[in-house]
Image (cartoon, rainbow, N blue to C red; front, top):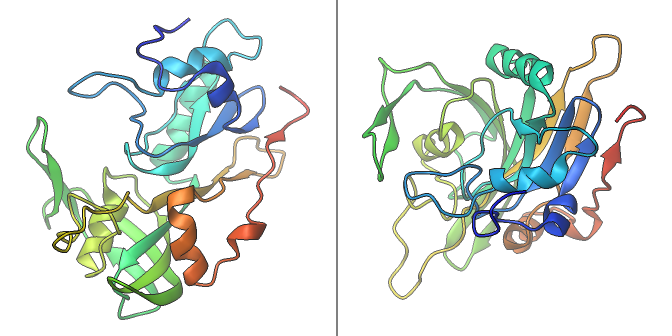
Length: 253
């Protein structure tokens, strides 16, 4: 069992966030504000809660990929070594389709398009970030504006992103390079207006499609939008009241 001081979520809390499971993978709905693993400063993280997700196996599942601390939504775990190896190959090969929803400051000039901006890392300790760099690692993201509205702090848009590469902070940097940073992004976003202390990051891993079984349809999993994004998405035209996602479970667990 994990050290209670290091487990970000209790058994009941992490089990309630399981969106899908079978004999190979588990997909959970990651809450915002919690790192997936221990960072530079240590502290509570999601990995220590995975001990509650064995479902009869001897070992806890492990991360197949990463989400930022403040990003919510679909997080894929592999249940054993072979599953992790297969998932790693799929993520590295671009075979996993990932869908992100974001609320951004401003409205992109074009309603849809492709961003191709290479990236590199700046710094190695606390405070590091990514930057646009023609000599960096290639990064490609498709985007589509799904709705807009005029907020008290200016125009905002609901944008759907599909990254084709898996660079750290890719969507956040690419969104900022569009001139429309993700709302609440303290690294690549706009400075809060005087007297306003900022908002949570409005970036959500909405869905993931995993072609895990060659002779079956791909696994498609969706995560409901988090509470802190609901008002803005509603204003952009999304019917949040019908955003009910039932947990899925395959016949072979």
